[in-house]
Every structure is written in C-alpha cells, then in structure tokens.
Length: 261
Image (cartoon, rainbow, N blue to C red; front, side):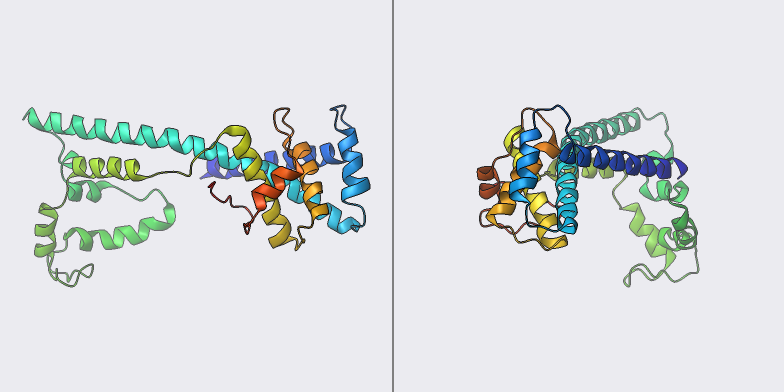
C-alpha cells in the first residue's frame, strides 16, 4: 500500500515537472528554432485573449501533449501484457493437468476452486472482514446455515454439491486466457499520424468542455503552433490543416481519444 502511494506521488511529481517544462517551452526562448512560432502564437493567434484565457489555453496544450503520449504508451503496454497473460495462463493450466495425470498426489487447492477460495484472502484490507464473514456461507462450510448467495441453493449441503461440479483451477485459467484473447485494445495507428490526431482531439476536448473555448479558425491556428511546441518532437509538426481534419465533424471529449476511422 505504501509503495502504491509512493508511486502515485512520484507520478504526480513527474507530471508537475513535465507541465513546468512544457509551459517554459511555450513561453520562453529555448534555442530550439521555435522562437518565430512563439512570436506568431502570441502576436497573431492568441492576440485579443485576456491573460486568463491564455493561461487556460497553455494548460490545455500541455495536458494534451502529456495525455496523448500516455494513452499510446498504455495501449502498447496493454498489448504486451495481454500476450503474457494468455501465455502464462495456458502454461500454468497445462502444468496443472500434467501434474494431475501423474497420479502421485497434488495439493487439493490446485484442483478444487472451492478449496482454493477457502485459503485465499483479498489483497485489499478493506475487503478482508466481509470476505471472512461470507466465505463459510459461500463455500457451504456452515452445515446449518441458510445460504443467501442463490435462492435455489438453500442449504450448505446443496452449495457443497454445486461446488463439486464447478470449474476447477485449470478450467479457470483457460477461461482467463480466452478472455484475454477476446480483449482487443484500441488500435495504434501510424505513430506520427496517430500522435498528431490524438493530441489535437484531446487538446480540443479540454478547450471546449473544460475551458469553454470556441474553436474558431484563429484558435485552430493557435492549437497547431502550441501543439507542435508542447509535443516537442522534431518528427512531429502539427499544421492548421491537421487540426481542421482531426476535428472535422467530431465532438471531442476531454481526456479521451476518439477512434480513428
């Protein structure tokens, strides 16, 4: 629990540092060849906006730059984990079946789901008391109790009988592998096109839904310049035409990326 909290705090610190670096790129000279773009951003496209609106715009640009890269990274990691889960679940299921076939004895918990649940405990402390209270009823370990988990099974004996026909651990692992196979994450498109489109839509969503901007042509031009500077990648240049095409006919949602056509 403490490590989870530390990881979340560190992630928050990293996000703040990224935001500061992004704002500095958008507002200060960095010898990155973008000084003309910065001058045009403030002198032309954002002129006429009050300071508060400019700050909102810059915050949206930085959030979009971070958010779209995080989404792509998580999608990539999800694909890798999906394959690992399928492989590990099927391999463990196979090993359990092989051990069972040797007929030399094996832990009951590797065969019986009910036996496994009897020794398993929730990982979250808040769930422990509830599970300990309900587990005897769910598993049919209270001979005289009336089981409440299913109307048709109104005695512990019937519950125990039902557990005898329940899928065993190897079956559950196979089911987990099948579920992972059916889990299809959102498609990753070509890196440059996908990152541009993702960033633009997240940017627009934050501007319109959170900060109540109207996406005028002037703001779209400003978005193109700001997104290029905020993303800070030499291989990615966002143009006004990119912005216009990414938003054509779409209603962006903040923090979410619409799927590619």
